[in-house]
Length: 75
Image (tube, rainbow, N blue to C red):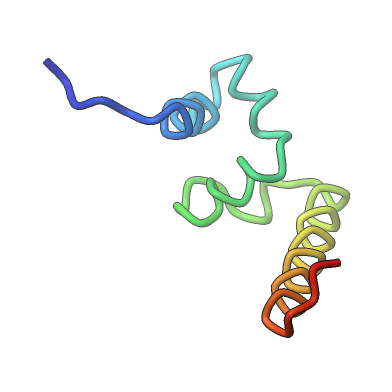
């Protein structure tokens, strides 16, 4: 019997397969893109300019939320 896998790992496996049609859809999701980049499966060169801009914007928003949380602000 194989080791249990999280749904996230399964989704990333599907997204990592360039021949999988559902994987192509998953690769459009920013959180999937970020994880595939982090794992070295894709690079920023694999993304459109629009997708790169969206990742940068999301990272900036996440960083702002982190800073606010660190300073005791909830908004």
